[in-house]
Image (cartoon, rainbow, N blue to C red; front, side, top):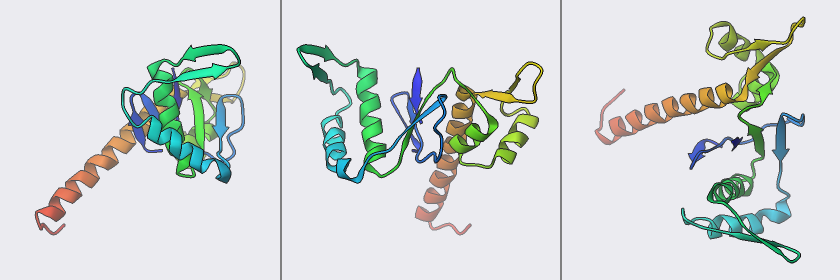
Length: 166
């Protein structure tokens, strides 16, 4: 299942902001023109309801969109409407360390450390120094990192509300 890759997970669609320069076939990067923001806001409003459905009419053909695609459109419209780009990555895709670094928002050297420490799996291409990292592992690492940060933020918020010094 492809994952839109902004900092939240919406019904199985993982979203993370901007991925500059990712134009190879493993990652499709989509940007919205400034003139499209009103339309994106309209899409976001229309699909705000969790059970929203949609039909697409192309010529004489009418297609009912499946709920997973409606969620993808809603999440993508939100990200694009916020001025970020959306990167569409199949979880089955393998990424270079540089592509993984861009998805994680870290340096390639840090990804190399994650690979060396066994945090991210890697496959070496035969008779080559090139390495490939499963996109599924990169997305899972990012989700775990985001969940940890959200937990820390929650603890700090509770401490602030309780008037605790830290």
